Length: 204
Length: 246
Ligand SMILES: [Fe+3]
Image (tube, rainbow over all chains, first blue to last red; front, top):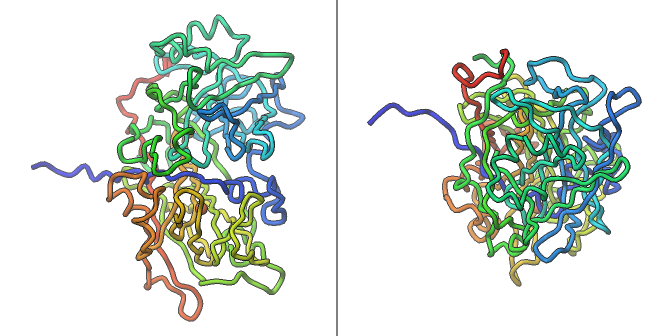
């Protein structure tokens, strides 16, 4: 026998279900008048530093059908590589950039879209720089525990090649599932929940 | 480490045997929406340790009162009036201050106010079904609502969800992000539900069931249910790998 660690267990997750919009994006549903705007709807303003970009894509199920009831959240550093968070002790992030966005997939087409800026690079635990990336959290009906993944930038080939997280991926053939190609100012990030092109999901 | 110090350590690994697995075929939608390849693990970096934090300035006066926040002036939602209260804690048992909680639910008849909802039960013109609040310095929160009704859903031919409230939580780090559901003590539909039973450990299910809390009931007004929620804990950062130069 020994002392107890006195730890609690994290509450188990349950699916966000088909009606997640009521709680998280009620204005998107047309339920106006309760909250002035949906949280995470806009990440940037006129004064935000950095290169303006659009990130768009779908979340496909195992039959290649796009999810029309998913909710995506993104979290990223500002243009200088700092997070707008009290846990960021390396400096003060751009006050005109929240770093956090939330968008539902379109109820008709399944397309999602974020208007944001390209993030700066941030360090890995050992001090090496990670390639620029954006963290994703995805929930929907049928997803029991929210999925974590990352988007990397298609025009950052050299940095991606040295990234410590991408370097951990044993099956290199899967790395492209995390890399969004660029066209103009738009990056397209297609997320596949299953199949040959299943996106890499992380246990973070 | 006190609650006032900035929280910067990495999080305890998630116990994925405690959470529901991704592939739970009795919950049919999970079959084509569950990743099949192994998740790739890596130690938390600054990207996972940090997260958005929300100020009380986002909250309106009625955001945590679902009985009134969608109702016409002078009116209120129909149903059993309840208060849901509790604390958001981390795995070390400490209150999590400043945690944003968003809730959504069906009305007293089991009907959601949503474009894709087709249940025959009527909408309540005075009930929207969304609310939000932020925990105080002790991690405590409360909101007022009506008890949601159970509702049927297309899974098996006759599956009914137990009465539940959906909860979305932000701690201090993006890796703490959690969405779950609260159930009500004594509901006979709980053990029949394929979504509940996606969780394999009985104790993990019990942790999602809120007991009736008569001591906090407001006499002649609203009964109380107590629901504590636990988010991932952080390692004490004393001997953690520091970033170079720190
Ligand atoms: Fe529900």
